[in-house]
Each structure stands twice: as structure tokens, then as C-alpha cells.
Length: 346
Image (cartoon, one colour):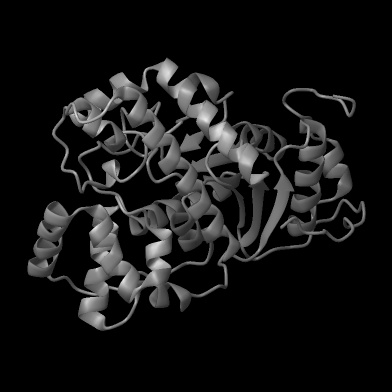
């Protein structure tokens, strides 16, 4: 997956005059190490970070979304965190609209906007200015599908989508009832698959784009996921999930489509043990990471970096990619310092 990069540009102090605003992006599957690297990159390039995680917009959902807390941000401004209550809806169109405003504002203040996250559709919709079509709605059909899911289960509903739109079914978790029903609804109303609509979207960016992807051996990534969830449990995930679910949020709410909360419902209802609920969360998170990687494989313009490199080599690779994409000089890069002050021997 790792790409070979061309030689860096000359050490000229002059930068190519651009007509498009710069947009820096860091993507990768859950638990791969985006958060810490993003802080180092943001410091080196005078960035403000825009969270590209669809669940971190919700207040009170901190541990389960691996949200970076205020005291951990090292003075870097972060946007689109804690902007909704869990009962409120939030969509890729909302994210796109917010990002357009933020990118213009951050750029106007002389900084580089920097999207960091793993929600593929959200991030791609911004990078390539997707147009979200109004396909209408069929409330009776939605209700029928809700009732079908209640009676036959999430897997049976997901199987319906596999029949008509296998590409969307591969991208959506069986528990993501709201989005599965919307994909079925689009097919019913238009006769066209949602995946086909996405495939026609423009791949021309309104930005001077630099997308960096973090990759890691699959089994080591899965081990990191398991360890992260163990740490979340130590930090109080069970209690956080209990509090969120006690609010009576509808099961099809956007906030409950993410991982870390609904997996505890059977445990709280006495239908399984805590250990079984945690194992389900680990399994579903590993599957989610696999779907993230599948989405990213279909994206273009990504330069991949090995997440298992030491910090010095990882940052050197990142600097090389950014220099090549944004045509920054080597002198500009050499004047930047790593936030941890590591040396090549570490």
C-alpha cells in the first residue's frame, strides 16, 4: 500500500503561487495513532485541527469515541468537537457545510486547516465537494423497515441491502439501522443504488489537497484495538455508556450508530455478561477498522506512512509528503521542530 514519493523540490525559498486554499488531511483506521501524530504535524505547520470523526461531535461521549480532551490538545485549536447533544442529528452534509466555513476562516487567519479522522464519507465529501442530492423520502417505507428490523433483527435488514446494493452493505455495519434504511429508501425511490450516486461524485478538489494516510500491519492494529478498549474500560466506559443510554435516546439516533455504547445494551438488560459485551465491542471495532480501510482503498490522492516508524522517521516522511504537495521549501521544513524533540537515534 505504501507509495514511493518523488524527490523533494529544490531548497528555493519561493513557493508556488496558489489560487486554491490548502487543506491538509490525516486519515487512518481507528487506533492507528492519528491523534498524537496530528499534534506534531499541527505544531510544525501552524495548523488548526478539524475533527473528521462523526461521533466526536457529541457532548458527553468522550471515552467511547477516544475524544481528545482539552488538556491533551497542547494548545492546538480543535474544531467540531462537542457541538451536538446525543439526541441531535448530524450528517455528512452538516459536516461538509461546517468544514467549508472553517476552512475559509482558518485560511483567512494565515493558518492551515487540518482535518484529522477516520469517517471516510465525511472527509471525502469535503475534499471533493460532493453534492448531496435530495432523493425525497417515503415515511411509510421507513416505518415498515423499522418494524422489519424489530421483528427479524439487524442482520436480516442488512441482508436486504446486500441484495440491492452490496457496495453500500459492505460499507455499513449491520447495526447502522438508520443509514441502511436510507440506502434502501434511495433504491426504492430512484431505482438507483446509493453507492452508484457516490461513485459519480466529482473527484476534483476545490482545495490544494494533501492527504496523508497512516497504515499498520492488520494483526498489530487489531491488537492495539483490543488494548485500547481494555483501557477505555479502566477509564470508565461502562459508566459513560450507562449514562448515555439512560437518557432514552432513540436506538436509530445518529449518536448510537457509533461504537462504544449500544454494545452494552444487552448487558444492561441482563442478556449477557460484561465480558461478553466487551468482546462484542472489540469484535465490532475490528470489523469497523476493516471497513475503514476498505473505504480508504477506494480514495485517491492518499500518501501512506507506516504508523510503526519511530517518531523521527515518521515525521520525516510526513514532511516530505507535505513539501511535495504544497511545494514548501526544504529550508521551511528544516526550521520546524518536533514537539517531542526526538533525535534520529530514538
